[in-house]
Each structure stands twice: as structure tokens, then as C-alpha cells.
Amino acid sequence: MNILEKDVERILVSKERIEEIEDRIAEQISKDYEDKNLLLLCILKGSVVFFSDLMRKITLPMEIDFMKVASYGKGSSSTGNVRILLDLHREDFSDLDILIVEDIIDSGRTLSTLVEYLKMKGCRSVKTCTLLDKPARREVPFQPDYTGETIPDEFVVGFGLDYAEKYRELPYVGVLKPSVYKNN
Ligand code: IMP
Ligand code: MG
Image 1 (cartoon, rainbow, N blue to C red):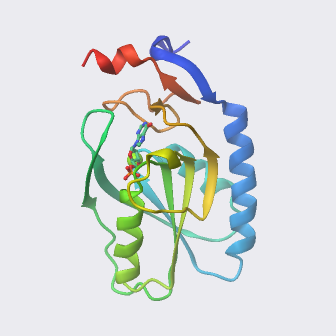
Image 2 (cartoon, rainbow, N blue to C red):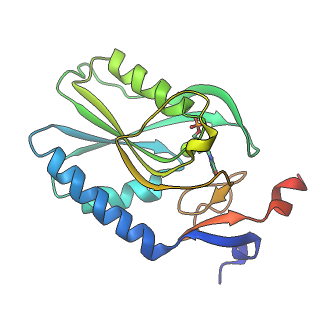
């Protein structure tokens, strides 16, 4: 057992459940993007685990790329600021159908900002895919195109998601014991 698991109160989305979600979404994307020019875009760091599974399950040729944005500070609540830390560098975006892969949608600020940003660059289409969605926390209206699982308003870690840069390597999504972050 990973030593980090003692900080997990309970498992919210199991390994097996995540696998089912990934199979379902990858199948749908493989149908929807058959006649498109897919660029699968990983938003670092949180979506890297979900992303690397999806890219291997989608049965279409694709390009991959990475962006890094900062929306959270160290803690467990959003600042509402979205800063681009790693950008896409291309001459021409006009033949790209970008599918952004996120770990979780919370306030909605990260994805609504990114979608606008990429549309402004002239992409043919920009859609979004998220493993988890916490609609109860929305501050700006945002509806993803592909959603793995809708979850309640709880702070979760694992499968790429962190608390203060920890717990990303856990193989499931779990609820952190509140004592872990209330002591900080
Ligand atoms: P939004 O811009 O508020 O929608 O924030 C989305 C980002 O906040 C995600 O990509 C995560 O990095 C982070 N985030 C939101 N909720 C959680 C959570 O429960 N655990 C870990 N990170 C979270
Ligand atoms: Mg993130």
C-alpha cells in the first residue's frame, strides 16, 4: 500500500470505474473525430494520467500537445486567476480540431478561458473532455463536451489530481481527509 493512502478518507471513483469511463469516452471520441484532424491537448499537470490512457484508447490518428495553466495556488480553493505557463507554438491553427483534456472542472474558469483563447487562435473546432466535473462549484457557466463522472463538492486527489503537488500517483480518485488540509 502506498504510504499516501492513509490520508484518503474514501475512494470516490475506483480504478475499475475509471477504466470503464475511459473506454466509453474513447469510443465516442473515435466516432466523433473520424473525419476531423484531432489534436489531443493535455492540460498539465493534472490531466496527464487520464490523457495518457485516452490517447492509447482512441482508435484514430492524432497529434498530441501540452499546455500548462495555473488556476490554483497551493491550497484547496480556486483563485479565479488563469495564467498560461506553457503555450502552443504553431504558425497555423486553422486545420486543427482541438480536444482539451482536463482532470476536473470546478469554477469553470480554466476551461472557459482556454476555449476562448484557442478559438481566438483560429482553430477549426475546440471541444473539451474532463474526467471529473463538480457542477455545484461553477462560477462561470461551462458545459464540457465529454464528462467522465459528475461528483459532489468535495476535494479529491489521485489519478493526476493533487493537493499541494502530492497524491497524483494514486491509481484512483479519492476524497482527502479534511484533517490533511485543515492543518495547513
Ligand atoms: P477551475 O478553473 O476552477 O474549473 O479549476 C480547475 C482546476 O482546479 C483543475 O484543473 C484542478 O487543477 C483544480 N481542482 C479543482 N478541484 C479540485 C479537486 O477537488 N482536487 C484537485 N484539484 C482540483
Ligand atoms: Mg488541473
